[in-house]
Image (cartoon, rainbow, N blue to C red; front, side, top):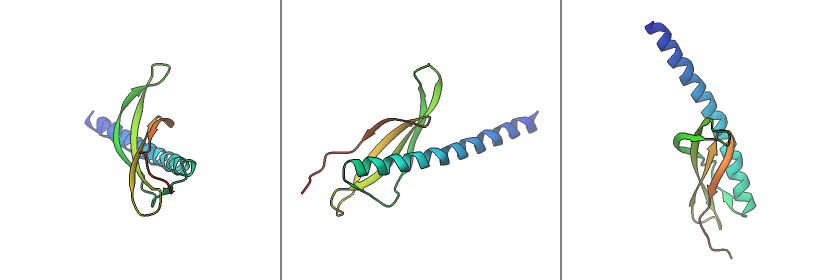
Length: 102
């Protein structure tokens, strides 16, 4: 019985790791798109998962809610911390702080 439990935990861990890598790639693409949309420089592929939780989708099903942080720059001199949230593979929300333009 303990072997099956251990096997189930290993399979679940492998699935979570593979799913996390795929979602990070989505967050990387979305972060880059947001930076381009606001004419900001996306800095050094700086996407990192900062929080994992659960949220319900429109049909009431539970999905993983991941928050990713990334850095952008408006003039190449400063770093601005931004974040986005993915529920499953869908962009739920994002935040880029106000910045000065020249």
